[in-house]
Each structure stands twice: as C-alpha cells, then as structure tokens.
Length: 475
Ligand code: FAD
Image 1 (cartoon, rainbow, N blue to C red):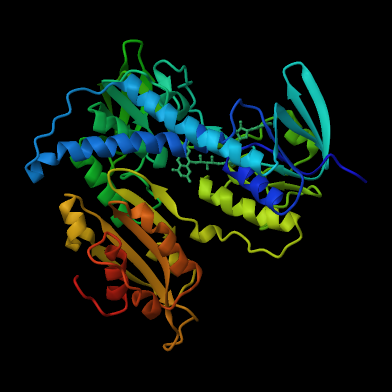
Image 2 (image 1 turned 180 degrees about the vertical axis):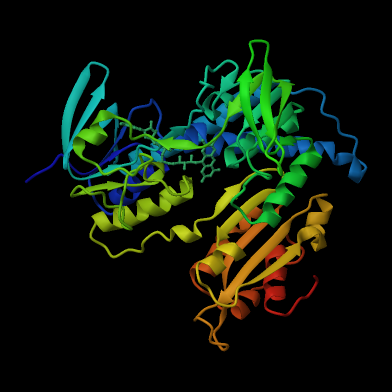
C-alpha cells in the first residue's frame, strides 16, 4: 500500500515540530498540519518564548533598580508597554521564522488547515473552503493544550484574561489580580510587578507551587513578596464587578471560616492550568482513547490505542512542558523509524518556574521518596546565600538534595541522588546537570567530585552535593 507521506504530524508546537524534524532527518517523508498561520505552537507564540522575553525585561528593570548598590545612578523613567510588546513580538517572529526555515530545509511540508484523523493512515485537512484527504504510514497527534477556564469567570479579553490575551496587552495595567499560583501565574506576577503594576495573587493553598519541596516554595514566596507581590493564601475569587472591583473569599487556615475582601484590578488573569486540545469530534469519532480529563492515553513509546497512530506533547498530559514534548518526540520518531530508543522518564523531567530567581524541581521530594519505598532517605538543605555570586546579586536561594540508598537497605549500597530542588538566581541553568545525576544514578560520591568553576552560581549545586556526601566545604 502506498501513502502520500511516511509521517503526518497534526500540530506544529514543540511536540509536533520536534517529531517532524527528527523523522525527516531519519529519511522519512514528513508533513506537518497546522491550523494557525504560524508554526511553533503555544511555546513559541504564546508560551515559553514570549514570557521569557518579558522576563528578560523584568531582569533589566530589576538590575536597574539595584544599580545604586554599586554606586551607579541609573533611573527608569517610564515603561512603554507598547514598545515592550513590540520587542516581545519581534523576538517571537524571529524564532518562528527560524523554525519555519529549519523545517523547510529539512524538506518538511508545512500544510495549513485544521487536521483531523479519519482513521489510521487517513487524515483530512480543512482550510477555509478547501478540504483534502491525505494518507500516511504513521500519524502523530501533537495538538497541544489551551488555557483552562474558570467557571463563572469567562475570559472576555478585556477585563478577564488568559495567558494568551495577557501577552498582548499594549498598556501596562495599574493593578492585576492573578488567580492561580503555578508557573504561568508566577511568571506573569514577576513580570507585571517589575513594571510597577500592583499584583495580587489569589491561591487556594498556603504557598505557591504547593506540590513542590516546601523549602523551595517558601523561598520563592518570600522573594516575590519582598519584590512587592501580594499573595492571598487560602483564597478564591468570588466576583468581578464592572468597575474592576474584585471580590474574593479568604479562609481562616485553622477554622475554615471565610472572610470577604475586595481589591481593585484593571485586569484579572485566570491561570489555573491547561486543558488538552482533544475536544474535537474527530478524536471521539476516530476512536482515540482519552483519559477522564481528555488527555490522549499512550504507552511509554507514545503509541495510542490505534495502530500507527502516535501522540506527543501537552495533549498526552504529564507536566505540560516543552522539553517533555521534545523528549517524547524523539522517542516517537525513533520508534517510527524502527530504531531502538529510550522511553521518557517522566519522574525526572525538570519542572522550572522562571523569575527574578528561578525555581527548579526534579525527581522526588524527601516525602515522596519515602512514600515510594526508597531506603535511607536523607535531605540536605543548603541556603544559597553562602555563594558569593548569589550575595552579589542581592538574591537568596536554597538547594535541596534528596538522596537514598541505591539498592534497598544494604549498608554498602551506593547513595544516589533521587531529587534536586532549587530556588535561586539562574537555577534553571542547572536543571540539565541535576537531571543527569539523577537519571544516570551516578553514585553521590562521584557526583560530588564534579568540579564547578569558582566563583559561579553553579557552585550552589556542587557545595550541596559535597555536603550530602559528608564533605561540606564552604557551607
Ligand atoms: P502546543 O505548543 O500547544 O502546539 C499545538 C499546536 O497544534 C498548535 O500550534 C495548534 O494550533 C495546533 N493544532 C491543534 N489542533 C490542531 C488541528 N486539529 N489541526 C492542526 N493544528 C492543530 N514550557 C516549558 O518547557 N518552558 C516554559 O518556559 C514554558 N512557558 C510557558 C508559558 C506559558 C504562558 C504557557 C501557556 C506555556 C508554557 N510552557 C512552557 C508550556 C509549553 O508551551 C507547552 O508544554 C508546549 O507548547 C507543548 O507543546 P505541544 O507541541 O504539545 O503543543
């Protein structure tokens, strides 16, 4: 049987474009179907890249405000939000253009239109009035996700926003309320706060990143509070009035009794998570197996329940991160090409929140390691202030290492690192190194022998490894 393509990928975000880049590199004739005008998906257009462009501006402002520490007289006189947005857009356009060229150079056909799976090997593309059918040996679903909605607070693009609209404001809001306390909520809080916008974060728990290591989440909250962000813990939004008054209920942590409070806000950002783009009729019609939240079920190699139909990225659930999608894309591509491959180790995907200081979480917290049955779990916590580069930045941070015995309770078993949790300046840059240590089960003593250049921020990890190995040096 002959097909139009070896591989058709539906969706051109990190999951889709990474799959296509790899399958085409492996010699497979590949097409990507994208319903929007531009490739790159959420990450390039409405996620990772635009938010980091804004956070780059936030860092510049933050540094300017601290300049007096070094005897420098620098003042920021105005924020031109329209120009700031234009600079963000330019960054995005540049990255999207680069990706488009890269895909074309790999001979990937980019087909615009809404793709649907009719049956295994059969895809329909609808672009306005045009509809056509294409066939492929393999079809990869990479349809991604979109902002979750909050009942009673529909996004209107004017006062109530999702992250999509928040990225496109051309005027700086004087005040915002952010509902949610995950990565997206905190990144917007950092950005707006740095501009001088009054930011109130409403969160249901007693700290942001509630499932993270508590040392990390409390350092992040302390730092953001010090910068000026106002957190309302144990709270939930109850109404948004025409005049911008936001009402919310705050529960007493002990008794649960609720008190009503109000704050004035130009904008309300709903950042309570993401839902998969699997709502289309064709998902059900084609017989794709979805879980109870609508994410596509796959095996460890990315296979769906349908033959030669695969899925990657946010649509499959997990942590909903671009680097997770990249990893899945490599596994699926290699599998399609019939090569042996590794499966994605979902336990060690780094979670990162970017800000004036970053937060990183990889692997188990101490409690999770114990619950998972590891023997000899130990936690080593090193405040980062002892690092001179952290001190120079006027920042703070913490590094938390969770170690356990590699082979049950044998006293001679090597101690290995099963979790690394960090809050600190540029901590995200250490995520890759930390993951390697965990993923490759490098014995703690060997990991602690790694040499980090002095004086660098990366020494925060080196010092913590040494301390965990019983050889504390500067801490
Ligand atoms: P998407 O990027 O969502 O791409 C899916 C694509 O499929 C879209 O282009 C969509 O138009 C297209 N599509 C959907 N259905 C169809 C159809 N039927 N036919 C044709 N095309 C279709 N992750 C990180 O790792 N680091 C970060 O710093 C980070 N920051 C983020 C900040 C924000 C504000 C947001 C919202 C997300 C962020 N993420 C970050 C998450 C990251 O963007 C996603 O994990 C990533 O984009 C998922 O890639 P994907 O390919 O699965 O889906």
